[in-house]
Image (cartoon, rainbow, N blue to C red):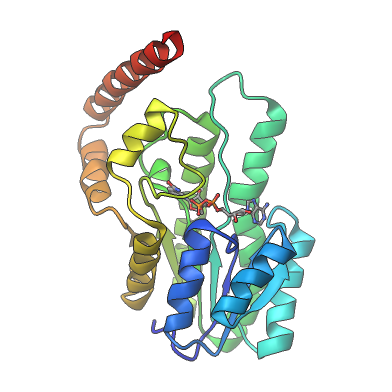
Length: 263
Ligand SMILES: NC(=O)c1ccc[n+]([C@@H]2O[C@H](COP(=O)([O-])OP(=O)(O)OC[C@H]3O[C@@H](n4cnc5c(N)ncnc54)[C@H](O)[C@@H]3O)[C@@H](O)[C@H]2O)c1
């Protein structure tokens, strides 16, 4: 799908990948661009630069997401592309509190359900639409340092697959973006696991460019890091071998964390 003359909504657009994507979309000549994030002031700053509309929206609130879609329809009369990009992470494993698990579930997964519920009836009526989910390579592989991130990003990939299976024949495209490291506030340079991700890291602008290209070619899986396709086939070709490799990698990175802490 070409984004020229389309009405596009992006969540989590105040910074990082979402902000860069807003710039990329603006350069395509959309009919309307709605940028949204938690903080209205920050969102307005981005909207001012991309000549878009700012809407404050906490994606973990269904009411907010409904309002985001309703505002778009009021203002532009239609919604062609909804990019569910906002996401968060917490480091940690079994000790992660239930409250944090719930927060991750709400922001990284329920938000995608709320977006689909709000947008799909309108898209079905028009016979066309596009849902883009910014998931992560962690949703296809795993994120060693974060159980909550790995699990919720897998759920996001599953949600995107399910939506594609159910609505693909009704004119609704779905893409699932699965990057490795992207240089945004989400990557923590002090953490060896994140430093490992940095080995493969790209800029938010590069990630945004890849998303626009993926939408243009209507690919389900958008991989800003092409090597993720190889890692994913290694996993599906021999799951046990892949798990052993990940166990070795975790051991190596954990030793590094322990050395860093002792220093
Ligand atoms: N940076 C990476 O290495 C990386 C890799 C793979 C996937 N991702 C995914 O890309 C997406 C964007 O992340 P980023 O790297 O740009 O991070 P970021 O922290 O720079 O930006 C995330 C944005 O989402 C917003 N946000 C957080 N919670 C929200 C909520 N409840 N409602 C609305 N907005 C909210 C934040 O305010 C922020 O502007 C996320 O879904 C993330 O999981 C990032």
